[in-house]
Length: 370
Image 1 (cartoon, rainbow, N blue to C red):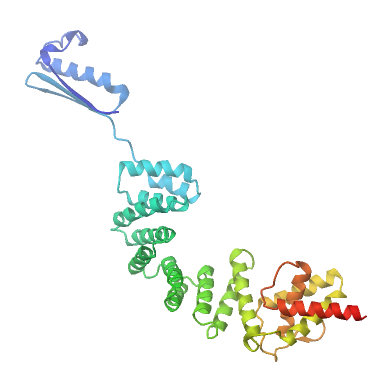
Image 2 (cartoon, rainbow, N blue to C red):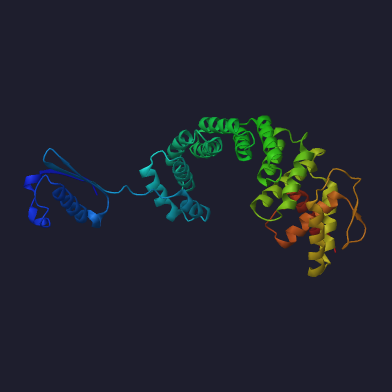
């Protein structure tokens, strides 16, 4: 609703609207009665009313009350509870009333990014960076969010610039450090990425995503030199979070390390020792009932989670559910053969599939001879 203003002569005012004794223009009683009249007339719609008497005229002006901006204190809990449909209109109202409100710009930018609108997010977050200039922490967060939106748009230059600016403001911002590390690795700058991941872990040592990212970057940088450290990092991830997407990625990457280890001394052809161990495992499991098979496989898999040194023949481990001692390569073959028995279409990721297939062929030949 828009405001209004008008002017009339005192002598032209309809004095029938006023109480008797206050109908003479220019008198104090007249002006008091006219003011009371207009105040009562506008009372129902609120707003601000001004009645001024000057030079024999009545100047009346009315302005609606400015809408009250929603408080961030009421919007914050909605965002935390991911009730975005309720939070968005409040944020938009706040931004309409205060076009450079730093928190409204930031949160609307983050919402747009999560909704798959990176260009809208980028525009809002650029404004949020400027609006938060007086608050280093808030500005760093806005820069990180801007970097993520820029990355979704494929603008690696702006993303890197934003992340570096965020780290300059907050050197201990682990998320910014991790994000910059990922960006550097994508660009092929593995050594620089590793350094950023190490810095991020120094700030947040329990961050499993950074731990995994560091392990992967080390293997990309030099798989031979960093094999041991990468394997230890991946094991940390698996032990801290045995199940879920991140754990599966860590297990797959450990499997690739094991597969590489398997081929170090024999890059081409089959490893006959692995073929023999796979054949032994096939024969062992063939005569085993399901309950004992599950017990053996569970124990061997648990041992495997601790890391297997496939190319160290001197290793010997004892098992509760199987007699004798077992090398790490033999255990790896037990795991692979056991998994194939449970889920024939899956692969253990240990790089033993070719040896397993050869063992299957040999077992079939032996069966025919019998």
